[in-house]
Length: 41
Image (cartoon, rainbow, N blue to C red; front, top):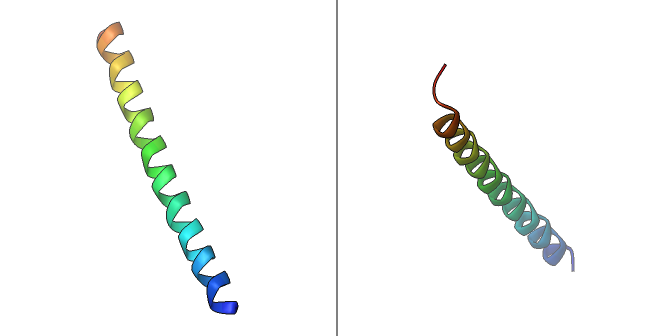
């Protein structure tokens, strides 16, 4: 039973890490798009 719990925790960590990476990429794309629309100051 303990091994299943550890595996679940590891999977959850992996999913959280992947989600954070995707969110960071979306924010970067959003920032670049805004800069492109507004022009460079």
